[in-house]
Length: 212
Image (cartoon, rainbow, N blue to C red):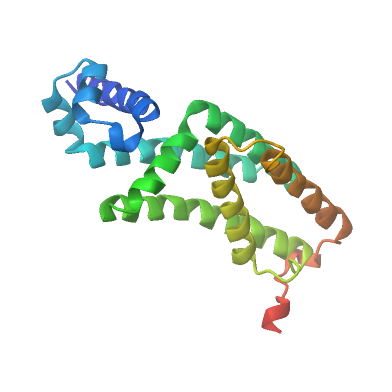
């Protein structure tokens, strides 16, 4: 019975992803999802309660998978600029899989749905916190990050990716905005910072210029 319940839940989530990519959040209906999954509508409401609950479950599952992938990547013992390049590669995977579309649909839905907004802020907050941890590691190893705190730099990088995802979905091309190459060029800056800065002995925390 447990296995059957898990299978039904998975079927519904997979159908919800397909309908969301095809119809968008506004055009998606629980009946369409249930029909696509081949299950009674009552099963969808049993597992997820509502359209909002269904879409949040889908986003949470996709988000957690990709967040864990990113954590493993940033924990690798390789130069930070190479890890950043890997993050750019992951962006291409996430665009192709539809995850970016799901994320942006959820952000848009958050503007008029407080429940979704609360959940999306919490889930996206995990990404900001992860990048802040990475930035603090760089600060401990190499010293001050120019005029930025670790949290400020993590915010800029996170916002660059989220904003770029939105514009890529809108179909911006290279002539108007060279989005992909601009993101990847940041790796050059990170590499110069790493290779031009001597590691701080013992990895001690460096005070930030704004805090002196």
